[in-house]
Structure formats: C-alpha cells, structure tokens
Image (cartoon, rainbow, N blue to C red; front, side, top):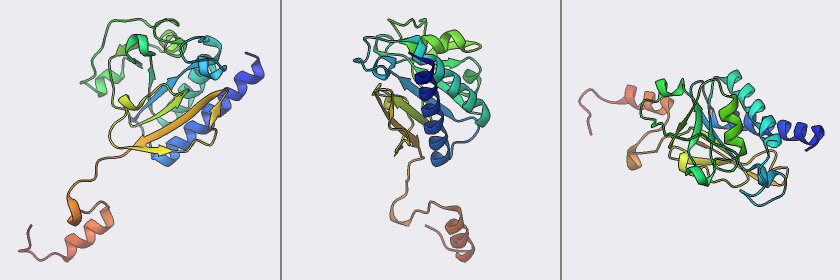
Length: 201
C-alpha cells in the first residue's frame, strides 16, 4: 500500500472515530472495540489477504484519539481465535470480570490488526470477551458480540475505508419501568418536587 493510501485510511479512521465519540457521548474510561479486516480494506475476501501495512495507520490513529479522550481500546481478533480481544493489561483493574486467555495473535491466526495491536500495546493481554460502550467495524468483522446492550447504530461519515464497509454503534442503558417510567433528570426533578409527601407507587 502506498503512503498516500495509508494516509487516507488514517484520516478516515479519525473522522469516523471522532464522530462516534461525539454522537455516542463517550466519556473517559469507556471502552471502544475495533474490528478490522485488512483483507477487505485492500479489496479481498475477509481472512484471505491480511496486511500489517493497513493495520498500522488504524492502530496509531485509534491510539492517539483514545488517549486524547481517555478511552480504552479493544482490538478484536479474527474467527480463528474466537474473536477474542487485545487490550492493555491496565484495563483489567477497571473491569475485574474480564477473563484472560492464553493465545498470541499472529496474522494467520488472530488477524493482522490484532497482531499489530498485540505487538504495539504497552502490556497487551488477550481476553475472551468484553462489553464495550461503542465500536467500529471495518470490513464486517461482526463486533456486536462485544457491545453492551442496547446498541445504537451511527452512520459513519466515511462509509468505506479502502474497499471495506464501515459500521459503528454506541450503546445506551436499557430503558426499564414501563409507561410511568422517567428517563431524564429534569423531568424526574419536576415530578419529585410535585409529589405529595404521602404519595407512593
């Protein structure tokens, strides 16, 4: 891949990531999962022609922006490693339910993106699953299994990175309680102040 194409990839990732962070209202400490088929980016069928060249600008861009916003990244492995994820070891302290597994991703078993992340994170570990607050899927790698409920789709400003389709989503808490339930603080405050002292469910 030429330098100009790699620059286009980096710019597309940055544009989409910033849009997702803004629309999804992501906050410091949130987890962002990224699934990438570098094969699809260069126009080949997923899992057939992975390239570390395409992984590099994606990783570097995502890492830079995640640090800017205080987010944790999780890079999804390919099917051969059951779509496990590469994260920084420090995330284990924030999410004690994460279960580490013993595997080291390589391009042909884990995928080029996960392999690159594993080699360039500070202290990488592999976990079997995660519940991320948002995600970007480049090339239909099916990240949905690693998103919290409920997923809210976001239309990416850049809908193709190379030849790969891009889908994105953030998640929101479930709405519970039925017809009388309240979901915003301003309405809750009004109802609280208006309630009589002896009023109950």
